[in-house]
Length: 402
Length: 80
Image (cartoon, rainbow over all chains, first blue to last red; front, side, top):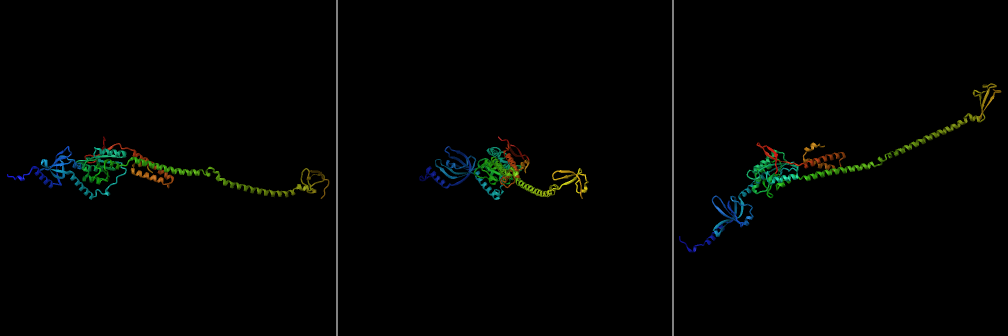
């Protein structure tokens, strides 16, 4: 073949043209593929290829870009990468400079999440009116979580510390992997069949989005919604909400927080009870004291100390009446006395003795003593006694006259 | 008013409510003294029962699984 010496390019010139061409045309692209030949260079830059079944694309991701990307890269991983084609002139190679990566698995998951959330929300599974009230004083709490790991231990410790009298029942389930969602739903249903639980805590410790994914599955949401026992969700993913969180009757950011929400601290309750006791005792004592005071006041009244004073008035009256009575009697006696006195006086003047004083004498036969009223009562020479006012004379009848 | 046997069957929440009611009644001074004494006595019984329940510690943790027919069965959970 013939060539024109003027149209002969140097390698650099050609490479430069190719670079301009490719870099101008292949910018701002999204590419999907599987990672292979992943190298994490000591410089901090990442080198890998992404491929599909027919082709390979060399990629580079600078350290500065990588810092902002949460997805950690592994061979075999499906990703969607965003970036531009660049030509590395010294080696005559093109490569895809990656500016952003979305784990393909995650991309799909995010979509699924959004879809499910909208659908269930429309159905009303998240609605306030369907949420059951969390009991204030549960006597038994069921834990639907992994039997191993920190979450279950943390929950047990917090529950024990706050309410040692509360019964704890563990229903062990798988909390990650393909079978987890079914298992969690089964666990919730089993707890409902068992029945003797006031509250359930359903959850697990922290992890990646894929680890927690079971709690975004529909079967778990439905089991939570249908549970007759109230449920606190405790998926250890502090900031984001899982579908389980939306459906649950209460959401806690972590398993420990769930245990705190589940039961009150018994020390507070003991304080309340003790406080109530004190108030009752104080109230009753106050009442008793006030009654006693009234009683004391009444008891110290004169009525009890000097009961006789009640009768003072009566006694006085009685005295007065007696005196009056006595006086009345005396008066009467006096009057009678007076009458008697006057009668006596009159009687005195009528007394034979006073007649005698006037010079009269009483003549009697002697010794019979029969009073002589007529001269015929005696014969001459009879003995007679003559009673004078003073003394008596004894004599003999000398003569009598009619 | 309450026998101790009956108190044991009444839920914690209800006992607590009854205790609060008793305290309120005692603190209002309308009650005649015989009524007050009865309520006081009952209130003390309630507070004792509540304190007893709070102090009781559940020692064991139970584990819930299902048997072959899917029926729930409960056994002791061995903690490490």
